[in-house]
Image 1: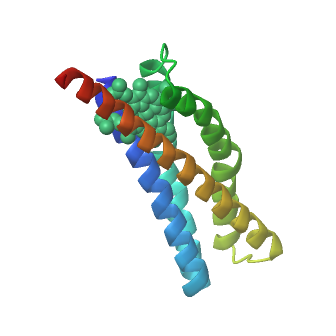
Image 2 (image 1 turned 90 degrees about the horizontal axis):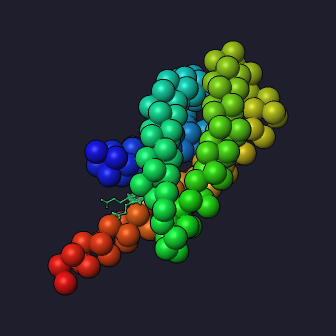
Length: 149
Ligand code: HEM
């Protein structure tokens, strides 16, 4: 059960951030303020998918990998707290702040400063999660190959 849920939650979390990130960049560069505000509201609703997915991937990963000491498992365990802290301390508050500013038409300097930080924090989590997906797939593939021998 955990083994089935873990990669699904991981990929859902990754894709959710990817959609937030690309729609943010696209709307900031090419769309009107009204569209930016709509994107920001949708992102806040999307947190109800992202946050549970990240709690599930972290908890299931730590349970599956509790006793593992191999390099990819250790790397995943080390990355997970950065992903969680980055998400909870930067991405979630930034999403709420930017949505509230955009929906009151307040596109001032602090909006754009926070926007840049949010994009950087999002890119960081996409990179760290991408590495964890790669390591997870390699761990599963190695186990599958060992069984065949
Ligand atoms: C954002 C964080 C994470 C993501 C996106 C993620 C993603 C994945 C993916 C895609 C797989 C491959 C499953 C498959 O191909 O069937 C996997 C497997 C696995 N992950 Fe994670 N993972 C994350 C965090 C963690 C953490 C923190 C641990 C703790 C060590 C962990 C432990 C494992 C284990 C033990 C497996 C199964 C390996 C096996 O089949 O033996 N993961 N993960």
